[in-house]
Length: 161
Image (cartoon, rainbow, N blue to C red; front, side, top):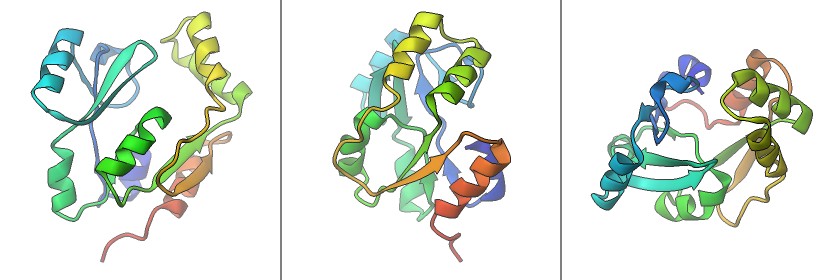
């Protein structure tokens, strides 16, 4: 997503809040404790939140400002919250970035964040069906980053003029 943003600076890339140390790597995110996440949730700081893979994830309410400014917003979500996300963001379009199970297994192992058992659980969810809701565009991500970014950019709405 960072590479997509590099090509499309008009996009607002949301920085998620996650109950994982920021040193875990991957995307830029705000790492918080479970207690801090729960406090923020109760305070209404998240427009969307969910749990997956033993972690809590939140989309900060600050996303509302970017939307009110007419910006296109891009965030990494979960298939399990798509129905709710569609209710919160009626104009939502989903770009499902997917990879084959062998490629996904290799990538998960390479990042070194999950045990073999956790990877197996993630792979078991790889064919999770998308719930009702927004239109879905699919990007197959079995190849190079350049190829995936090109395909991702191809399914985005044209840059605003």
